[in-house]
Length: 115
Ligand code: HEC
Image (cartoon, rainbow, N blue to C red):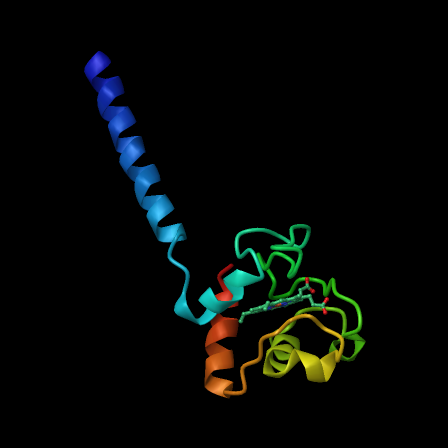
């Protein structure tokens, strides 16, 4: 009986351990977002008073103002336009990031889909 409990606890511990390791691995394409965004938190949590959490961003309602030209949802297309040059969409934005290379943007959006 006791042996079973100990074994069970050990197995659980190992399983939990591996989950933690895999969730700590951020795809390289979106590692750069982490300085201003939490990737594992939602829209309500800003990092360093900058960007909203990016969890489930693809298909999520746009929460920031001044980007009406993109529509009201973060579709892949809207994200593609935003990430190309946020300042072009919204001159006053504090998002100091842009990715001019289409292939790299595609990788970012692919990685965002998994959040
Ligand atoms: C230097 C800081 C910084 C970096 C790096 C950065 N962002 Fe942002 N991001 C911001 C800020 C600040 C805002 C809020 C912009 C505003 O209100 O104009 C924002 C807003 C956003 C939003 C809108 C969120 C919403 O809820 O409507 C998305 C989407 C986004 N960022 C995606 C990304 C992605 C993807 C990356 C990485 C490839 C990234 N950002 C990198 C600072 C940053």
